[in-house]
Image (cartoon, rainbow, N blue to C red; front, side, top):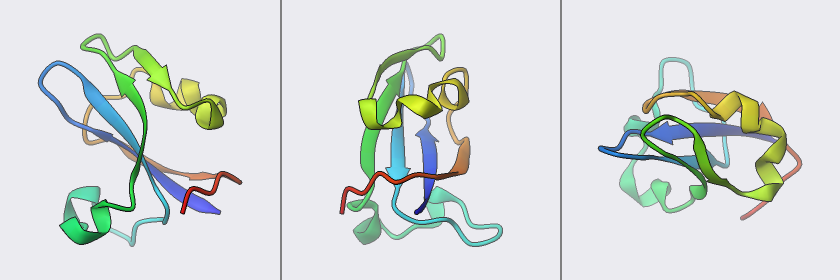
Length: 84
C-alpha cells in the first residue's frame, strides 16, 4: 500500500505523520481538507536537532529516511502497515 510520510513543521519539534494515500502531482499535505486529516496517524517526533525522539516500531524501516528531515518534507513509501 502506498502511503505518504509527512514531517509537519513546528516551533521546537516536528511531528511525523503517515497519510494512508499518495498525494496527487503538485499536491501538498497542507492542501488536504481538515476533515481528511483525521485519517493521518502520528508515527514519530523529531526534536529541534531533527533527531527522532520516538518512532512507531511499525515504521522502523524508514528511520533513516525520516531522521534529519525538516518540516514540510513529505515522501511516499510502500508499506504493508495498515491502520484504518
